[in-house]
Image (cartoon, rainbow over all chains, first blue to last red; front, side):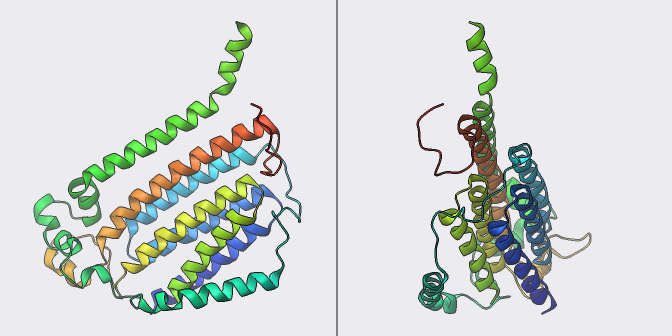
Length: 185
Length: 115
């Protein structure tokens, strides 16, 4: 119950932070606020019993904030107050939100109550990993047993995607050198 | 209740992607949508008073089945978080190139084909 209350307040903090990100004028402040939201998410992961995920989330958040600051630091741009794509008045927006929640209310009813894991109720691969993971792999951390042994090809695919995106980002940003060569020739 | 808050976080990200003009804010909104989906999967895996799926020395492995949270969504979300970083890095690189070419982050001013 304590965990539930703590997660509730952290989620409220994340929602307020997201509203700040959407409405604040200074872009650098928005990026820093995004970092704060990511750290809140990391604490939620820790409370939910996922310490590996909390560590990875902190590392990813720091790196993405650094990249985004690199994109915004020299720009000194202020977003104007009327910078939204179109002026959406609040009453149609509220009506849309009301009908959206009316529509997804049956789906929310179908979700299991918080604290009952759906995956563990029947014979599933999660049960297999938890019961036999230590004997089969010798890893006391079941999550690392899954990502590095049972589903190692999944992790290989993740590494491929990550390196592909790094190669893509580098080849997009390489433009300046190519231009210099072009001018020399 | 907690699921609803998670969905609200996702919807705020969707609002930012649809309504905002600034590319940096669109990128941040996409990252927030990613975070909300990851959080939703981990919330589904939680067990009340559950412990992390890590064995202490001398602990019986079969006790994890009664006390631990579900490890499989954690392993899959770990992949998803890292891929989200790659997607964000690629989008920021494109945004920096667009700023060099057009001198603005405003998507309504990025119209002409020049580069």
